[in-house]
Image 1 (tube, rainbow, N blue to C red):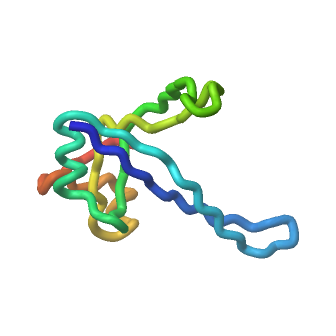
Image 2: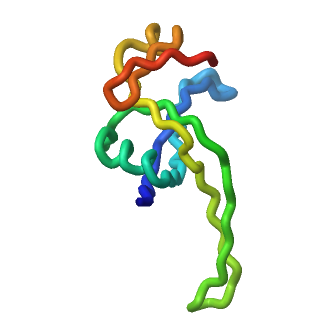
Image 3: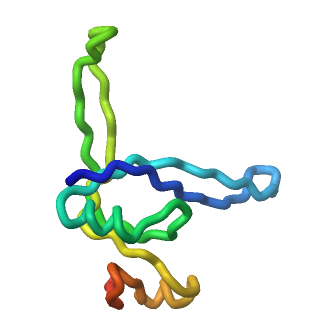
Amino acid sequence: MVANFTLATSDRFQDAQGNWQDRTEWHNLVAFKRTAEIVRDYVKKGSKLFIEGKLTTRSWDDKESGQKRYKTEIVVLRPFAAFGSRRRLRRGRLQQAGKLIEFVG
């Protein structure tokens, strides 16, 4: 089984004029086997996640244009559904597939 999905990350910063700006970036993710099943069963649109994974870039030849195309993805190694307050998350309390997980970060 394979799960392809996108994840948004948001960042807030002050520009040179001192105004607060929000920036959202979208990331392509892919999960395989049991990890894909966990994503399918527990992750819904709007879920807050902590993802452990690795960046990979794959390439292929576009059949229509003949050009080489590239796509960078995060291969999900371990997804964590984040529950609770930001304070609890900073202390490392996350939940994965119904089990409480302690992580070091």
